[in-house]
Image 1 (spheres, one colour):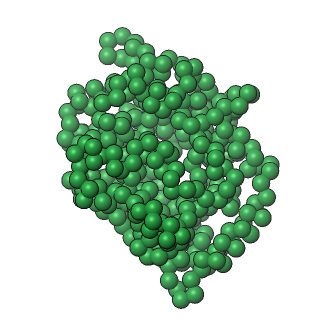
Image 2: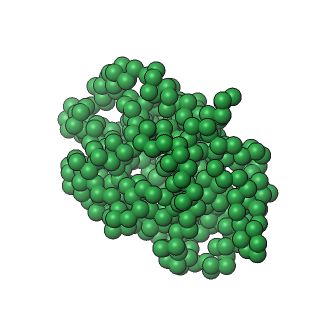
Image 3: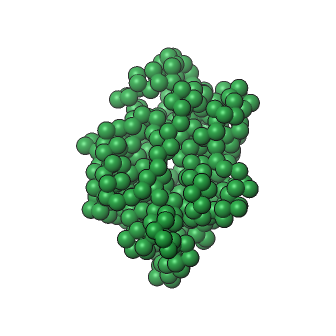
Length: 384
């Protein structure tokens, strides 16, 4: 297990905690950058989206791309990763109805699906889309989830492997060259900006951006067999190259707005939000498909001091939906809320005790982010 002294060095986190002067994000988000005025790279990019980009010209680029890949015989011509949520639904419906493409939508199975998440996926498919679900061996998934929680401080790492690699595998198997994602999270929410002004990304970015620098083969060293990891792995680089597979982001071609996507999906694909807000935040229309989502966000709060409310409020400030003052109030009220509703189910799923879980949590607390406050109590060194 990585101890607290290694958390900071592993993610190259700055010693001094700073908060963006425009939103609620801190400089502890991996790969984010702050300029001399104390503004984070995501806010800088949001300003450029508002004031500099020629969205008409970019849409024309997308139309030209669609003309190049559109099938002539009704075959699938683009892969769209989609769980039935607002964003993937928006992407698939836009490509189909506005550009005349025929998306093959792809879902990687959640660890434990929610009722609302499954309803949304079913409604989306019934609205008129071909669909493939990737469901790995549940025993292997369970083991990887537990081991990822302990080794990487993120129980969602095996889900992220599949979510990232399975669309590539489907694209190669079906001979589809284009994969269209929604937003480029690295530039929209703060991260590596090397792809900020291009529509695509290289598959070689996966290890650093999504896999915590540890590809699927890392688990071979932990005793897993190649066959056990096959569904979590992507196709070979040779197969990707020969298929001429390209990953593009719709957010390059049209201004990305998660709340507008919610209204769009509600109208066109039957998407419905949750009845109540998600634990750890104030919203109820994002990341609804897995009962264990909350533990992914809670571990991010432990490792970086950045919880789900920080992530939600930061992009809503950039989108002009709330003020920074409102965002700060929401962060202070909801960030770091423990996902208690599914806690016992999560422990049973991982086959660990509550004591083991707490030991893992405390092992990922970095001393530059957390300080002890009384017996078995912790508080952030610096809060927004």
